[in-house]
Length: 374
Image (cartoon, rainbow, N blue to C red; front, side, top):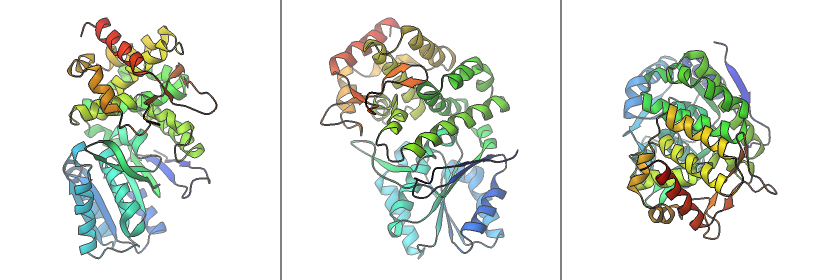
């Protein structure tokens, strides 16, 4: 497959390209040889990906004459913390890895966020590349330079904007994902279509069975569309001063549900519930038609099997109290991204997230629970 190269706008401090292909190792080696010919490589991954892809990548880099170190963390969101960041940094310091080194983030969103944050702070900043191995990381978290860690107070509350030097997306990695992990990523692609592209939403809706069966062409089309949408938004608003806020649709509630579940609920599944709730909030605020809300809900619940019964575990009060730590909170008030229609968010004077009274959120949560008898 011929690589697809997406060049981000020169307004980004370090413009970078996104390569989409199968069997990307050769492309990674060529890129490193050109851009970092003498650099030590530090691969950061998790235990599962280390076995699947990490050891092979290390061997190829060593065969290419590189000095390579391979570090891994336990799987899962709970590993994205200050403790693991410090452990990895101290290992690098003891090995006297210098500022000329390049970090290779190999894994999903947890690895990408943690490795990127280490790159942003180690020796006051060193280069890194993203090699996402999950669908979620491919279509969303690897793109845009957001890095960070979780704290007891909430998700991604400490971090930095630090763009990678390149992103290498190997579609064959999708074959190794469980169906749950596949849906976990598909939700993030759907989120981008709901907020930015009706045509892509229509395609996903029409081809959902092909996607769930992982038919190669359908998956490739969705991945390409999602990446182009996110890359375009990041080009126009790298540091989330305006339009990039729309990528948080579903996340005010989603991040809250993740934290309340102690990260047992996968990110995409939590965001899916957030999308349903925040779409309903859009209807409640007279911004979105009920028919559009039902299309979104039916796709998530009817086809992708998102279980609304998970909301039973948490009261509206618990959800709202936990959400107060969300990064989008302004002057102590929670803000939400609302839909105008499928493919377009509500935007007034370049403000893409607005405050909704807690009473409205409680009303919508109770309405969803009653409507679905949960």
